[in-house]
Image (cartoon, rainbow, N blue to C red; front, side, top):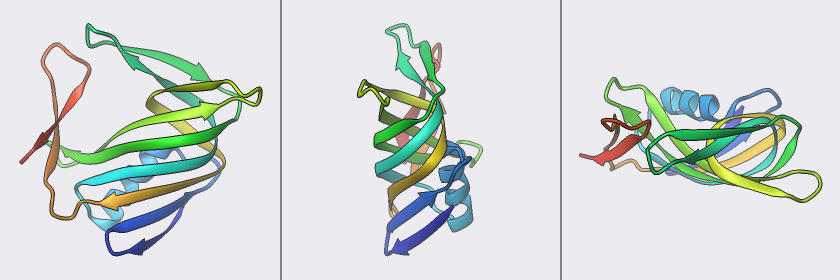
Length: 142
């Protein structure tokens, strides 16, 4: 991973084998930010695990292992109550036959490159807290 910063904007390049969530969380600890908006991301990924949450607050997952085009990526970063970084990301990918898939991103490995824009929210305090009877970790503002 390499990155450059201009004020509160970060532009990040992820390299083959790097996982998107882990890389962004690591960057938050390295730089020391607590809140951010992940505004865009493009590239090529593999081993994509994604899905959606049912009305009963249970995640359903789907896996696409071969490499795909990363068409969009957006989300945010906040800290959990224990101080560790937590990323909530949605994405859209396209298989080589042009079929798109989208949803909540659980895991994705960079295959060729990932180019991601992150806006640090330097004056915001955001915390993620588990919801009772749900797999969702809610965003709270302090």
